[in-house]
Length: 372
Ligand code: G6P
Image (cartoon, rainbow, N blue to C red; front, side, top):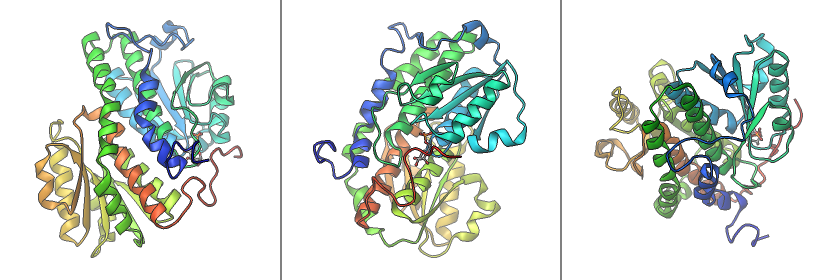
């Protein structure tokens, strides 16, 4: 079994380390040297895709957080209104769908019953359906109009890691492809994003190589009862995913919040010693989001929180208010989740292993949930 795990202590650790490859493989062969997307596998008439006026992303669990990231990218690049919904909530609210609606489902296994039923329903209503999936020939892609496979390789650990990064990568490719088709952004801009995406695997590798102190921090926190995660913009789904990982494998109460929501409730939870992870936007980004999130760090710290910060290399401003900072390499804001998620996965895996838990087989959970 140790050989199957590639020398790692668990499949989850192996899969965390597989991530540079999972992203690289998902990008491979999907664009030409001129920076043009070539998603020939998407067997939907481009004329139909051009008419799409609304996108609905459907998924469960970690895949739904990939969907939240996708919304930011797709709306930015394609200017098509995009909703993300948990698949099991979707059918029950009489959603508004027609032939100009594109439903994008995201599923690692391709067998999640809630997601499958939502896709079936969407198809019955006449929507176009594209599946982003990691498992060849599984049910959801077979029942969709088209499929864009993630090439993360088989994911064995119940808690998803490499499939998540591959899902985000595939969603970016789909967003860029739709933008290209519809002429929403200049080809030069698409080329630039592709170039930035191609640099991601080496940047993930750098994060993996520099995780020693982060692992030490995780081991020192094995007795924590609750950990909070804050993020904003694309950092918000990352915060949710960081919290989910900790719940799933370390059985620690964890919540992710949109940082802007702090003052509307969650700040009441902050007490002496409460650990709070903060996923900080790039200081190079627009809209002063960086300054707002840095002031959130100050606010929770002033109330006694231990502030654990994920920030971009070169972001000196966070240092003054952080007990601990993990720096990720620079990348454009929309692509940041491919980097900022990784330290949170490592943190959860290391902490759970320090508690002696089997991270590959967490209690009460299944890899693929084939019941509604
Ligand atoms: C289960 C797994 C999660 C996963 C979710 C969706 O709950 O434990 O890790 O995110 O299903 O799975 P899917 O295969 O559809 O991505």
